[in-house]
Structures are given as C-alpha cells and as structure tokens.
Image (cartoon, rainbow, N blue to C red; front, side):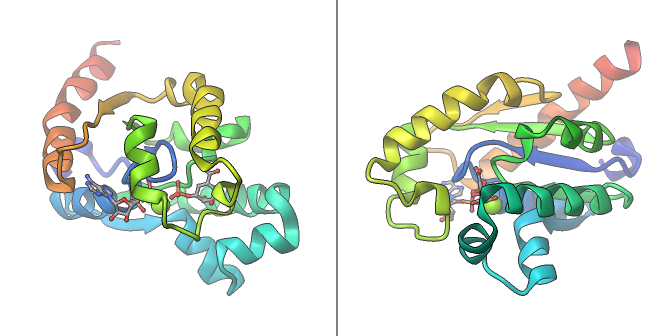
Length: 181
Ligand SMILES: Nc1ncnc2c1ncn2[C@@H]1O[C@H](COP(=O)(O)OP(=O)(O)O)[C@@H](O)[C@H]1O
Ligand SMILES: O=C(O)C1=C[C@@H](OP(=O)(O)O)[C@@H](O)[C@H](O)C1
Ligand SMILES: [Mg+2]
C-alpha cells in the first residue's frame, strides 16, 4: 500500500474527537509511513499546551502557528498527519493539504460528545453547552470538511482498528479516480 500511495502524505481532517490522532497512528503503521499530529508538533515547538496557547495568544494566535506548522510538515513525504479539527478554516491551509490525500473522518455529534464530555484539553469545548458548541462547529465546518478527497462515516460501534481497515480498503478507489481524471 505504501508503494501505491507513492509516498504521498495522508492528511486526516474532521471534528475534535473524531479519532484523527488515534486512527492516524494505526494508518501510519499500515502504510509504513511516519506519523505526525499537528497539535503535538505545535506543543513541542512552543513548549506550551494547546490550552496555554489559546489562553495566551487566542484562537487567532493558535491558527497562525498551526498554519506555520502545516507549511513545514507538507515539505516531507511518507507521512500520515493527524490535523487539528480547525485546520480547514484557513484557505491557505488547503493549498498545503492538497499536496496529499485528504481523509475526512465523519463522526456524529452524539459520539463526539460522548468521547469528549470529560476532556479538558480542547479549549473550544470549555463552554456552558459543549454539545451545542460541537453541533454549531460541525455545521459551520461541514462544507469545508466536504472538500476532502475521501469521506469515511463512522458509527458508535466501530473500533479504531475497524476504521483504519475501512480507510485502507477505500484508498484505492480514490487513487483510481485521481488517475482517470
Ligand atoms: N473508534 C473509537 N472508538 C472509541 N473511542 C475512540 C475511537 N477513536 C477515538 N476514540 C477516543 O476518542 C477520544 C478522541 O480521539 P482522538 O484520536 O484524540 O480524536 P481527534 O484527534 O480527532 O480529536 C480519545 O479518548 C480516543 O481514545
Ligand atoms: O477543532 C478545533 O478547532 C480544534 C481541535 C483540536 O484538535 P483535535 O481535532 O485533534 O481535537 C485542537 O487543534 C484545538 O483544540 C482546536
Ligand atoms: Mg487530535
């Protein structure tokens, strides 16, 4: 499969809690690729947590660092990259993402909420109504996530391993489409 992707990076996009980091790890192993998580790269580079960056620089400050990191990351090959859920917001990020194959993990809000209800590491969810916030973010971002090359819909029962298998099976169909275009 690694030779089939010919070193082209795989970028995972989707909402907070969609499983980009979890499934991304598994896909990297399957593809024989390296793995990067843009949030982890940001935290390592700044020596700050995502919460600290949002508190000190605001969302706009975080988005700038996120774009800078993505610009660096896309100069490498053979990577599976788990992105942050808001990477789709900036137009310039799409020019980087389109260097690779873009995969949307599409997960319903109820599942996202169940996974993240007790999580304190997503600053945008530190809200009086986190479920409503997830719903409005998903509504706002769906037209953007829809621009992915491949959309994988996930249900509540599917394990990360099953989702990774589903992605691996779906990748050839997208490559065929690209080749015939
Ligand atoms: N398929 C899954 N089934 C159950 N829990 C999952 C699944 N995928 C991810 N999780 C859990 O959901 C939470 C968010 O996953 P994560 O990979 O960090 O998502 P993202 O990077 O998209 O925000 C983590 O606690 C993770 O263990
Ligand atoms: O959706 C978002 O705007 C964000 C998602 C987070 O990453 P995950 O999608 O990995 O949770 C992180 O980048 C930051 O908290 C902002
Ligand atoms: Mg993540």
